[in-house]
Every structure is written in structure tokens, then in C-alpha cells.
Length: 250
Ligand code: ADP
Ligand code: MG
Image 1 (cartoon, rainbow, N blue to C red):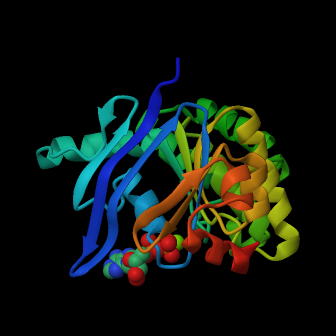
Image 2: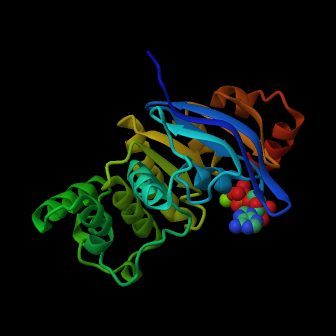
């Protein structure tokens, strides 16, 4: 039986008079990998940020495993709820967002220690497990400034994974990297795919999307113009807007 694990219903978002998301619907099953592609400014980041309440929707619903994420709650309850949501949903950004004053170990253990109350020994075991996974155990005591972009992004992924999230969101995780560093990050994402992590991946890399994703959504001007399996979206899209976009990006 497939369960819709992440569900976004009639999502709309405005910043002042600017309507950035217009009636977006999206369901992602457990273990599915969905790519979101589309021109700059089409609302991809806003949609990802709405999923974990970084940028709450103006209207519509976001659900994870049968629980509504964007609930109206009294402030104290809302804060606890959002903390839980952020534990369940890992997010990786284009610009890594590592804490520069903390070592790799500090970056990865901060949230689990604060939010899950891990002991130092438990936190150290966790950081070693996650760094081994991304192939960076030898950098455990380095500061971010001494890492390459690809290494920083792998640490950011390890940090997100340390919370044992149910879903991972990637917002152009390789866009800021020199071309030769893209592959090491893609490899880590492929490995997560092999482990059946549920993922929503905003990307400009069509080859990568085609190779790892079950479904591709093409967004333009705040709407999902077209969605389908990579073989259809990349090779035989129906919509003219999708074709135009792909002509420029394939
Ligand atoms: P994408 O990730 O597809 O490039 P974004 O979601 O970042 O698109 O942005 C969609 C639109 O929303 C853009 O026009 C952008 O300028 C606008 N936008 C994004 N964030 C904000 C904000 N915090 N305040 C005002 N406008 C914003
Ligand atoms: Mg963006």
C-alpha cells in the first residue's frame, strides 16, 4: 500500500501584493524522490520553505504522515510543534548555512544535543556515524572555513541526517559549487536515494534529476505547469512552457 507521506493541498503564498505560489498540489509517497525544476523566481524555494514552516503559506495545507504541519496553535504550542517539524524535515540549502564558529562536530551535534538531549557520548557516536556516511570522518574537528564547498555541503547533509529526518529537502544543493565538486555531493544524494529516503529536490541539474528521481515537477510563475516521470517530462513534455524551459536547460 502506498501512503501519501507528504501532502500539499491548494498551497498559496503571497509576499505583499506578489502572489508567489498559486494553488499548488503535491503528494509524495514514502521513499519517493521528487525533483522540482523551473525558472528562477518561479517559487521553488518558497514552496520548500513552506513545507517546514520557514515561510508559512498564506493559505492551503501541508501534511506530513497524517499530521498537518501548518496548524494554527497558541504561540507556545506552535513553537514546540515547529521544533518537532524541523526535526522531521531535513533541509539543505544552496549556501550550506554551516555555523562558522563551530567545528564540523559542533555543527552536527548542536541540534541533536539541544533538541534530543543526547549525552556527549551519544552525540559523538552520532556524528561519527553521519560523517562516515558522507565520507568526511577525518574532518570531524575542522572548522567550515577550512573545507571545500563540496565538503561543506556534505557536512550540511550530515547535519540534517543527524536529526533522523523523515524527509529531506534540497534547495539547489549543488548550484554554488565549482563543477568539479558537484559529483561528490550528488553521490551522497544518490546514496540516500538508494536507502529510500523520501526527498524533494529543487535542482537545475536535469541529468541528475533524470537519474535519481521518480517524478519531476515543472514550476513556472507559482504554478505546477506539468508533472510526470522523468522519461516523460524530459523527453516528451506536453506543455509548451516546459519545452521552452528544457530547450534552454538540457
Ligand atoms: P525560485 O526558488 O524558483 O527562484 P523563489 O521562491 O525564491 O523562486 O521566489 C519566488 C518569488 O518570490 C520571486 O519573485 C521572489 O522575488 C519572491 N520572494 C521570495 N522570497 C521573498 C520574500 N521573503 N519577500 C518578498 N518576495 C519574496
Ligand atoms: Mg530558489
